[in-house]
Image (cartoon, rainbow, N blue to C red; front, side, top):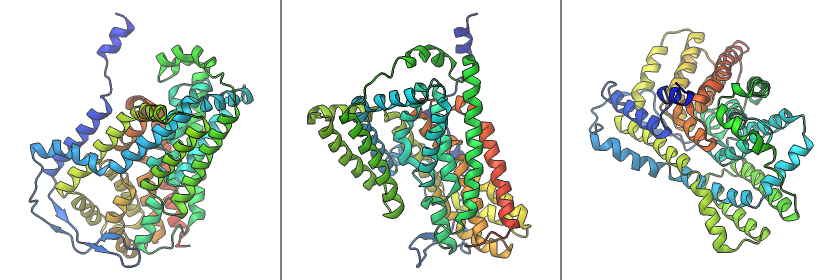
Length: 467
C-alpha cells in the first residue's frame, strides 16, 4: 500500500469551519444541561465600564432557548458582531498586498539573506521579538495581517511554514500574556478592581522574560531539528518540495521606491502602536491608517487607481477564510449569550471558591479562566464578568487584587493561540493545520502554563501589591 493511500485512510483534522461549527453545537448542548442564570449589570462610575454585580446572581427562565434555526442564524449574527475585525482584516491585508506585489518585501528578504548567511536563527529571533512587542502592545487581531509575512520569512531562511507560524503566533502570545501594556486584559481588569492602570509592571516584566525564553527555546529546538533532518518537519512534503524553490526565489533588487515603501510600512507599524496605546485607537482608526497607507503606496510605486483597486481585491481575497473564521468564532459567543449560561458558569466557579485556601483558590481561578477561554475568547469580555466576582473573593481570602489580575491575565492569554476558537483564525492566516500546530506547540504551551502558575504562587508569596 502506497504512502498516499495510507494517508487518505488516516485521520485528518477537519477544516477550521467544521471545528467552529462543532464548538457552536457544543454550546447548544450545554444550553440544555446548564441552567440559565444572570447577574445584574451596573456601570462603574469611575471607569464607565459595565460590570456584573456579584451579589445579584439569580437563576432565570430562558425565554429564548436555542432552536434549530437559531443555530444557523447565529452564523449571520456572528458575522455582524465580528464585522469590525473582519473589515480591518480585509482592508489591511489588501493594502499590504500592494507592497508585496511591488517586490519590496522580496527585496528586503533578499537583503536579509545576504546579511545573515549561516546565521538564519538570529533572524528568527529578531522577528520573534518583533511579534512579542506586538503582543505587549495588545495588538491581538491587528497583528494578523503580518502572519503571512512571517511565514514567507521562515521560508526564505530555509525553514518550513511552521517556523514562520511559530515565531508570529508564539511571539504574539508571549507579549499578550505578559500584560505589560495590554489594555484588553490587564488594563480592563485593573480598572474593574480599582488598581492604577498598568501598575505592578515590574513583576509582569519578569513574567515576560520567562515566557520569552520558553518560546524561544521551543522555536530553536524545532529549527535545529528540521535543519538536521528535513524529514522531521511537521509539513514535510511541502518543505521538501519547496526547499530548492526558496533558495532561488528571493533575488529582487532594492530600489529607491521599494526603500520608501518599506519605510512607510515601518511608519505605519509605529503609528499603529502609538495610536493603540496612547490614543485609544480601535479597529476603525487602524483601518483608516491602512487606507492612507494604500494611497501613499500608489503614489510611491505609481500604480494606477484602477490597478490598485484590482490588486487590493486580490490581497483581500486571500484572507477570506480567516475572516469567515472570525465570524464563526463570534457565533459561539452569540449562542453563549442566548443560552444565558456564561453567568451561571462563573457563579459556579465562585461557589467552588468559597471557604477555600488562597493557594487552592488561585489554582482554581487560573484553571477556570484557562478553560473558560475555550468558549469566550474576548479578554475584556471575560474581565467584566469575572473580575467583579473575584474582587470580593480576594478580600475574603486575603489575596491581593494585583495577584488576582495576574492569575486572570495568564489564564486568558496563554491559550488564546491554543484553543481552536481563536487559534484557528490565526492558523488560517498561515496556512497551517490545527493538528500540526498542536504537535508543534503543546510542549511549549504546557511549559507556559506551569511557569505561569509558579509565577502566580511567587507573586502571592512576596505580597505582590498594587504598585
